Length: 196
Image (cartoon, rainbow, N blue to C red):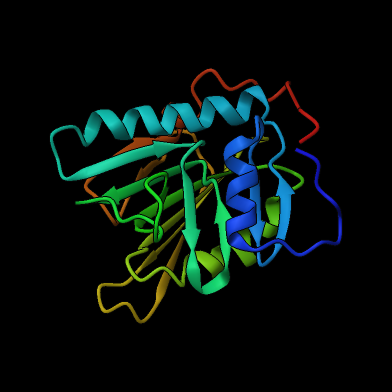
């Protein structure tokens, strides 16, 4: 798929190009941005978390998605591919689509050098416009470090927690689930520092 730098694309044009593309792209308010390839550490962390979630939530009213599931954020005109998402109850789809969801309760992103600021600032702000979104987890792939943000029960505030010890337990607020940082970082080699 060839993309011109400054052209504005409609959401419909983006979807037509994206479905035919071999590579993933985000859509941010008219701009199409290639999703960079992940490092082995990035992939391992996303797999470790999603596998543990999928096992823990089996036969419960939750679905776990990893890396390739497209999300539509209508208030910000963004199509994106979060690293890990949990959806409660039934899937809700973007209008006219069966391949793009709109209702995650939890999103986790594995931080890359190239996307760290965006994931923490603009992307988090966009995710917060999703009415059912309750929790955001940011996982550093270069050292043991996890940040967790979750909404209070009255939906008026966000609480921040930080974890830096591999023996710490990350307990999610949006679903009944906990995992040690040791398990999140299982088989992660911090000597492999990729270029993403």
